[in-house]
Image 1: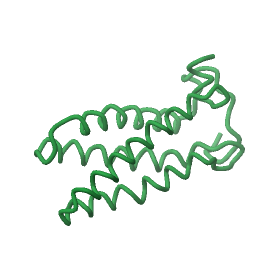
Image 2: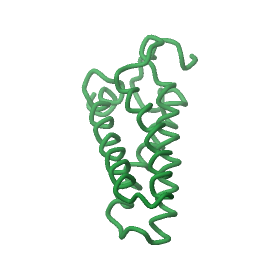
Image 3: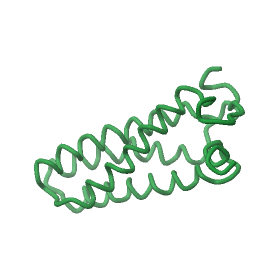
Image 4: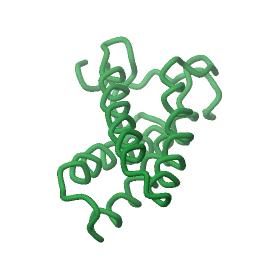
Length: 134
C-alpha cells in the first residue's frame, strides 16, 4: 500500500505502514528533545547542538506527516506541518540575526503545536488513538 492510498486498518503498531513508524519515532524523540531544550539553560553550546537536532527532528516530523493520509487526502492537522516547515527556518534566521524574542516565540509555539498535534492523534477515531486505547 502506498502513502496516497486509503489509510489501512491497523490493529497493532506492527501492522502499521513504514512511514507511520518513521513519523512516530521522529515525533516521540522530538517531544522529549524539545522538552529538554526548553528546560535547559539557553545560549550554551549544548542548547545550540540540541536545538539543531530538534529542528531536524521537527522538519522530519513535518515532512513525514504528509505521507499519513486518510482516503488519499490530507487532514486539518497537516496545517501544523506547513507551519513547522515555515517556522523552523524563520526561528533559525531570527536567532542568527540576534532576535532572541522571535526565536523564542517560534520555538515555544512549535513545541506547543507538537504537543497539540500529538493530543489530536490520540483521539479515539484516529489511527494512533485506536492503537493506544483499543
